Length: 178
Image (tube, rainbow, N blue to C red; front, side, top):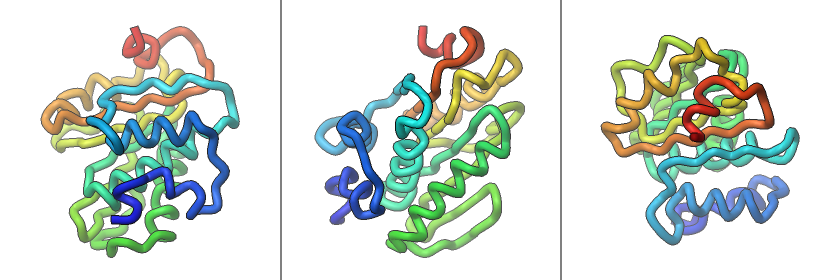
């Protein structure tokens, strides 16, 4: 309950520095004081904390809100990296036990689930509460990720959170943002 009431506490408890924009957006994504934001595009420069924010929110949503969270990025390796960062946060807090621990799928005793997805041809057949996409501007024209997962998000009235540093003016990041 300590974290559920104020997810912004996670940054200092993890020993992570945070900026006001990260704390404010985390509170809005988590629904700390109002309904959670359903769609967010985070567009900012490199090395400013986008992935840190996605990691903290992914862990919070999975372990404190028992949500099904999917993560993706332009390459499957990047998806796995983000998933590993979220897993480390979940393990560090040790608030819920792990029921299943596979490379691409983590299931918690509270019903929370974390799934790492490749950027194309995936995601059909399950319901998502949250989709986190890191470096979304670099998904490229061939990625059908957002199109394929829109029905999975719609079933749960889920959140779509796209984060990226500047990239080419193409692909789902630009289309979704228009």
